[in-house]
Amino acid sequence: MLRSTATVFVIVDVLSFSTAVSVATDTGAEVIPFPWGDADAAREEAARQSAIAASPKRAAGGQLSLSPASLRHVVRGTRLLLPSPNGSRLSLATGEVPTLCGCLRNYKSVAEAVQAMRLDGLVAVIPAGERWADGSLRPAIEDWIGAGAIISAIEAEVSAEAAVARAVFAAAANDLASVIRTCMSGRELIERGFGEDVEIALEVGSSKRAPRLIDGAYR
Image (tube, rainbow, N blue to C red; front, side, top):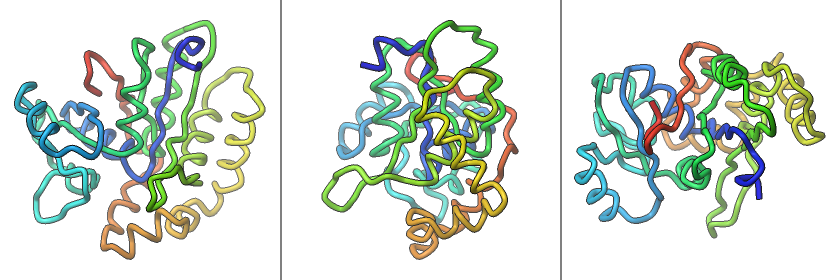
């Protein structure tokens, strides 16, 4: 339904697809979203597009993956195919509608890009959420906070849902680091040894770029 009414989409997956996209595009790389779950198909598509297939699972030791820390030093011009269960899936569902990728690192830049588009109509800011072990959708407070940050920086009338997201960001702002580190997704990453990814997600306002999906890749 939103695809038929929205004039721009903003995909928000703070931990960690959107943050990974922000880090990679800051280095001058391009990120190709791809469905999660079929490694063979991902490798084949990466070869077809002259891209590098990143691991859909977080990896250390120099392997490119969904972990933002692994993308800190991606070479400029690299085309990176990045599967993920939420951010990529949503990015691929927006059709021909202009699509941006937002997180806490780039929330101001994304908001500025939305306003620079000067589009009349609905701006759909989508908190991606997470997945439970059975594959069902799990609400993710970090994505509501990220969406609220972007909404707070856009000068426009907002829906009730957007107003709530904006209020969530305002409520968390004074203790944002603690909230992100101790939310369910943050705790999971820290316990698995990926605390650096949480800290990168907390580089609030550090990026001046607003990744936009153009010809199938965020750039």
